Length: 566
Image (cartoon, rainbow, N blue to C red; front, side, top):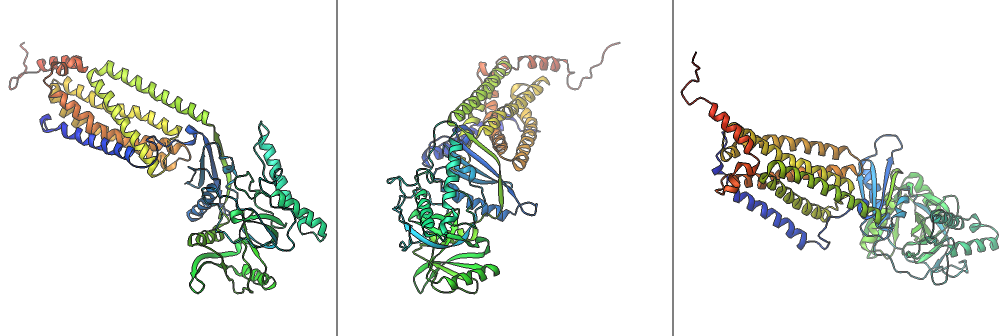
C-alpha cells in the first residue's frame, strides 16, 4: 500500500530542485568566459560543414586508429585557416569539419590526402618576415631559412607591398557569381607556374625566366589568399614556401615519398643541448635516402607537405642504415610537431566529400526564428489544452514546463562550454518534441488521479495512490523514449545525432521535474485548506468526483449484503 500523503515532505523536494537550479545558473553566469547562451551550430549562426567519408583500400571498415590520425591531421589543417571556433570530430567512419562564420570555403578541400615527400633544394630566396596567424600552421616545426645561393632568381621577394603574386599567387575574392570559377582559374595558373618543368631546364635563360615567374607568383604572406594548390606533382619541379614563410625554395622532383618513413620521434640531444627529430625509414626508403645523402653532402633536402617546406636541413654526411636526425633551432613543442608531421603527414586513409553545406548567417537566423516560433506555438497549444482540461492542475503543468526549460537551457550552455556541444536545428526539433513527452508525464499523473477519485476517494487520498501507480507508467514511458533516443544517437549520422541528444537529455530532465516539482506541488495542494485550491471544480476534477460520489453511495454498507427483496 502506498504511504499516506502526510509522509511526503514537498518542501524538501522543492528546496532540492531550487538548489539544482541555483547551482546550474551559478556555473552559467560565474564560470567560463563565454556568453550565457547556448553554443549554436552553423545551421543557426551560419558557416560551413563538410562531411568526409573514409574509404579503406581493402573495402573494409577503416581502423579506428587511422581515423583518429586522419582527424588529428585534418584538425591541424583546419586550424591553419585561422578561424576561431572550428571543430573536427569523428562521426562513425566520417570526419565532420565545422567552420562557423563566412570563412569556411577552404574547409571543403581539407580532406585531400596529403603527400609528404623529399625533394632536393636547387636554390632558395629569403622573404620578408610576416606576422603569423593566431592559430598554429598545419605543418610542423620551423627550420632556419638558409642564405640565398648564388643561383637564386633575381626577382625581388613577393609581398603585398611590391605587388608580387597578384594574378596567380594570391587570388582575391571577386564580386559576382563567377568568383568561384575565377578563383579556380587562378589556382591552376599558380600551379602551372610553380610546377613548370622549365624550372630545371638545361637552357639557363629559360630556367631563369621560369624561376622568376614562379617566385613572383608565390606569395608567402598568410594574410593574402594564397591557396594550397593541392598535392604537388611528384615528377615536376616545385617552388614552395618554407615553414613560417621565411624563405622560398626551388625544388627538384620528388626523389623519396613520405610513405617510406616507418617512424619519427622527437628527443633531446644532451651532447649538443638541443631538440632533434629522429627518423626511421623502411628498407627501400633507407636505400634511396642513403644513396641521396652520399651524393649530396652539404646540400639541402626539403621535406614537403601540402606544397609547403616543413624543414630543409643541410646534409652533413652520408646517412646509411635507415636512421637519420634533423637538427635545428627547435623547441620541445616544435620538435614534437615536426615528428608528428613526418610520421602522420600523409592521411592514412583517403576521403571523399559526401556532403558540404554552407549556410549564410541570414539563413541561420531565419532558421532559429522558425524553430523558436514552432516551439512557441507548441507550448501555447499545450498551455491552452492544460488550462481548459485541468484548470489549476494545468497551471502546475505550465509551471513545470517552464522549470523544465530552465534546466534544459542551463545544461545546453554548460555543455557548449565543457564539451563543445552545439545546438543545431535538428536539436531544436528534439527540444520541441520533448515538450510533448514532458506534458505526457503530467497527463499520465493527472489521469491516474481521476481514476482514483472516480473510485470514490477524496482528492487528498487519491494523490499518494495515484502517484504510486502513475510513476511506474511515467518511468516506463520515459525509459522507452530515452532508449529510442540513445539507439538513434548511436546509429545516426550527422545532424540526426543532435535531435537524438536533445530528445534524450530532455527526457531525463523531465523525470527530474516530475519527481521534484510536479508531484510535490500536487501533494501540497491536496493538503491545502484553501477553498479555492481544494475545490474539485477548480482542479478539473468536479465531474469525476461526482461520479465517484455516486459509486460510493451505491456500494453496500460494510458487513451488510446488498440483497434485493423478491
